[in-house]
View 1: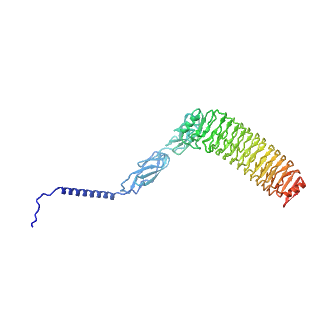
View 2 (view 1 turned 120 degrees about the vertical axis):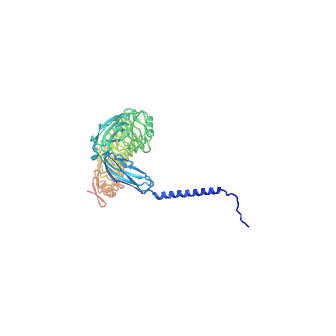
View 3 (view 1 turned 90 degrees about the vertical axis):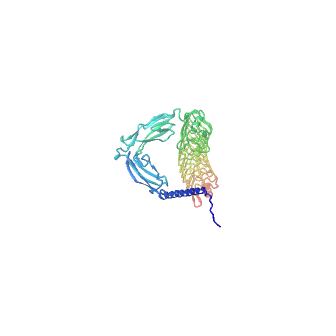
Length: 567
C-alpha cells in the first residue's frame, strides 16, 4: 500500500495560541525572578544609630543630628523624632533647637520595627549663647481682694535679670473654684482664698500672690435652692479636697438638701439666709454627704434634730452667735469634724448631738450651756480633754461614754449631777476630781476606767451610784467626801489595787459588794459607828470585818491574814 499525504491546508489558529502561551509563561518567569532579585538585595530594619550621643547647646542654638538606619540595604528607612522636654529642646527632622536651660533626651525611632537611639542635650543659658540664666521672678502684687461675679485683676511678672535669654513663664491657681488665672489675668469665681503662682520656664523660679474673694451678689451666691442646684449640675465633678464655695440666701431650707447639691462637694455659707431655725433632717444622710463645711448665720436660733446626721464629709462648722439649742443627733456621726466651738448663746446640747464624731480633737463649750444631753459626745474617740463650764448643771447619761483617749476632765462649779455611764470606758483617764457642788454620781458613771489611779469625791456628793467606779482596777488613791450618805451596790467592785479606804461619818448605808473583790484592800477606817451595812460581799473576808466593826465601832481596821482587827 502506498502512503499518501493530504493536500489540505494546515489551520493557523492553534499555532498562534501556542505562541501566546509561551509568551505569558516567559513573562511570569521574568517577573518572579526580578522580585527574588529585589528580595535578595534588601533586608528588614535591625536598628538605628545617631551620629551624636551627647551634645551641649546654649539657649537659641541649633544642631542637626543624623540617624542611620541599619542595615544599609534596609527597605524602609523612615524615622520619627521626639524630645523628652520641649521646654528645654525641640527637634524636627533631626534638627535640635535649644529652648531653655536644662536637659532633654532626643529620641529617634524607626517606623519599621520601632528601634530607637538617644542623644542627651544639655542646654545652658550663658556662655557662647550670649544670654543670661534666669535668677528670679517677681509680681507687681502680692495680694488681691476680689468679689465673686467675674471681677478680674491683672498680675504682671518681671523675670530677672533683664538680660535673661528665656523670659517665658507659666501661671497656676491653687484653687480654681476661688480664682482662675490666664496669662496673668485673675478672675474671681467663688468665695475663699487662692494662691496664684508664676513659674519661670528657665530655672523654675516662682512668685506668688494671695487672692481673697468675697461674696458680691453674683458668682456662687444664690437666692433660691433651685438656682443653686442648676448651677452645681453644670459644674465638673469634684472631690472633698476641692469643694465648690456656695453662698445660699434663702428664707427656708428643704429636707433632702444633700440631693440639692447635685453630688458636688460644697463649702456652704448660710450666713446671709434669713431663716431662724434649720429644720429637722435638712442635710440628713445615711452616710457620706456632700457638705464639707458650713457657716450658720446670726439669724438662726435653733439647729433641729439630725440636721447633719451622717455627713462624714463635714470637716468644719461655724455656729451663729444667736443659736440657743442644738437638736438631738444634729451632728451625729460627722466623723470628719475635727473641732467644734459652741457659742455662749447655746443653752442646751441635745441627745447624741455629736455622738460618733470620731475625728473631734477639740470641743469648746460656751458659758451659756446649762445641760449636756444624753450621749452628747459619746464615742468621740479622738477627744483628749473636756472642760465643763460653770453654768452646766447636769452631765447627761452616757455624755462622754467611750471617749477612749480622754485624759483630762474639768467639771465646772455649777454641775449638780453626773449621769449614769457618763464617763464609762474612758479607759486612759488617770484621775478625776468631783467638785463640792456635785451632789450625785450616777450608776456606772466612771466604771471600766482601767487607767484611773486617783479619785477625789467632793463634800457635796451625797450619793455614789451602783457600780459608779467598778472595774477601776488600778485605783490606788480614794477620797470620799464628808457629805456622802450612801455608797451603792458594787460602787467600787473589782478595784483590785485599792489598798485602803476611809468611810466618812456621814455615811449611813453601804450597798452589797460595794468594795467586793478589792483583793488588795487591807485597811478600812469607819469614822462613825452604826452604819447600815449590807454585809454580803461588802468587803473582802467580810464576816470577820463585820464582826469586828459591830463590836468595836468607829476606828481603823486592818486585815492580817484572814482576820480583821481594830487598831
